[in-house]
Image (cartoon, rainbow, N blue to C red; front, side, top):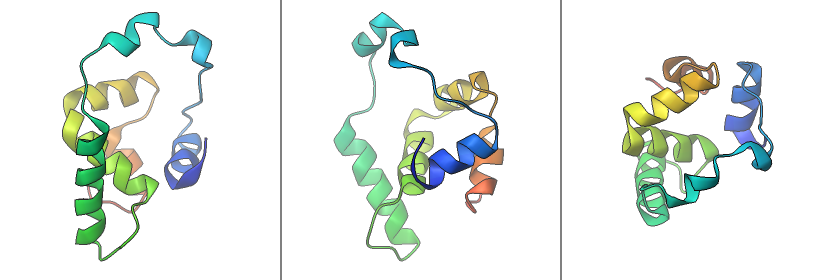
Length: 92
């Protein structure tokens, strides 16, 4: 895992899974468009006075856009959203 978020996830005990373990139908799932994620992450970065979007901004955008679904995915990997945000210095 890379970046600030990757380090925080590893510190909380979440590991990476090989791509071969991912659900084959995952690419067919409805989701949020990349543009929406980047727009939200840019807004979040701006709120912190940053001109550059960080991995923490991207994570915050995903949590905001996916809501409880993203919480469920993190929980499945043994990580609580609030705990991850706290480790990143973000208010849950």
